[in-house]
Image (cartoon, rainbow, N blue to C red; front, side):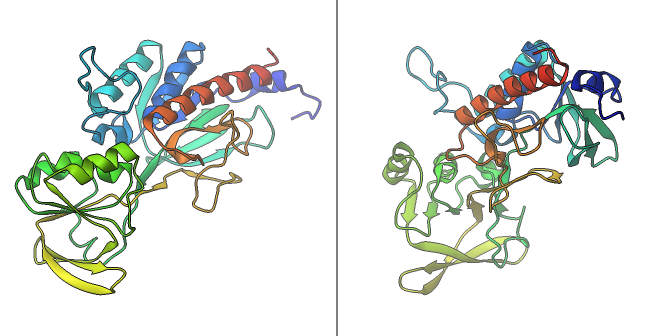
Length: 333
């Protein structure tokens, strides 16, 4: 290519892209980005390997999203219902959705205006001059004995998915953040035998959530305690718990173990992308990554607070920034 070619000319002669903007992931950040991108008159394609909504689908009652209240003050809409509304809204504005898992992202060449090549697990590729990564994060595993062996046989990472299988059973829940408290609260409506353990001496969750757990008569809270091992034959029968200050271990009967130990980013492999020590994508306040034309939004990026509300805001900003980037490389600014 002639080095004297302008950015606008380069954009016009590129291989025809599949969309102006490709969004990877259809959680709250991706759905918000899809809506704002489509409303900016961009040809938007969303790639999602599962169902629209991501982890928000697992929220029984979305109580801390602004405006998710009825006039009478009663809580309304589950996470799934909220996600479905966002999905239908994005579609109504013109965003297209395809099922697919993106395994890698690369650019055809360096510099602004070059197409991104997205490789799917199926072997197919999609091309776009701008991309928003909104792939979120996956549940973190503890890596203890019995965790993998009994995964799906009493060990779970999703209360709303698997909790109903253990009605009136004895359940061990692990964690001390917002997700752990939310899901323990849900489990307490299925069983009065919930033991929530946390390795620290206090919850990391928001104060209102923590207080609700401590006052719940169906939940026994054990601080300074960690899950050491999960035991059983064909399914979970018991656990080994360790009192951390005393370094003492005891065996406790249990029918199920629900683990809510935080999350880790699930970004597709992307050469030259700056991340922090834990693998979260570094962005500026416009959601731009270290690669021109590549943006990140939601739980997959470095941020001090991971909530549905912040993910939705990230997605809107990312789409707006992507639209401005596309205008610039077309020479239309």
